[in-house]
Length: 245
Image (cartoon, rainbow, N blue to C red):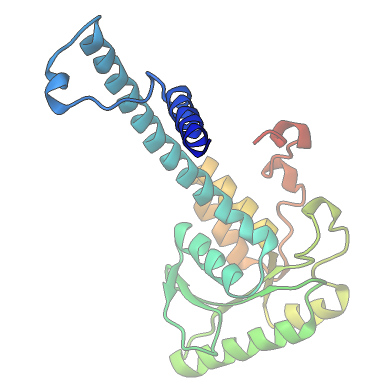
C-alpha cells in the first residue's frame, strides 16, 4: 500500500512538471545563435531598430522633461518665499542684465550693478502684504552701501505678496498705502515678483524693449505700475487642458 501511494505521488509530481513546463520557456546553447531560421535574423534586426528608437525617444523625453522643469522654475516668483525666492529673483535679474555682486551673509539680499547704477534689493515672500519693516530693512542696506562705496544706490523692494494664494485671487494691494510715504521719501521702487516675471517674459518676447523697461524700473519711485494685467503674460490654462498630463 505504501509503495502504491509513493508511486501515485511520483506520478502526480511528474504530471505537474509536464503541465508547468512550456515550449515558451527554453534556453538555447550559444552555438544555436549562429543559425537563422524562418526569417529570425531579419526579426532580430527589426527588434534592434525598435530598441534604438525607444532609446532615442527616452533621451528626447528626458531632455523635454528638463526643458519643462527649467521653465517651471520661474513660477517660483509666484509661489516661493525665503531662499528659493531669493535665488530665482537673482537668476532673473542676472538674465536681464544686472551684474549680481557678492553680498555677505546677513547683509542685503541683492547687491548689484546695472551699468553704472548701484542697486540694493530686499526680497520677501509673505503670506499677506508687504510691511514698512521690509522697507526699513531695505533702507538699512542702502545706507550701508552708501557708507561703503560713497554712492547712493537704487533701492528695490521686491515682494511676493500673498504667496500662498493663487495669483488670480490676490485682490489686495501688496504694498499698502501706509508704507508708501516712507518708501517714496527714500526713493524706493516697489515691485511684486509677479510684475518682475511679466517684465522678464516681455524681454524674452521682445529683447529690444529691455533697456527701456529696466531704466523705467530704476527710475521708478514708489509702486511700479506696469503689468497690472498679468494675464497678458501669464497664460491661463483651463484645468481640463492639463488634467491628463
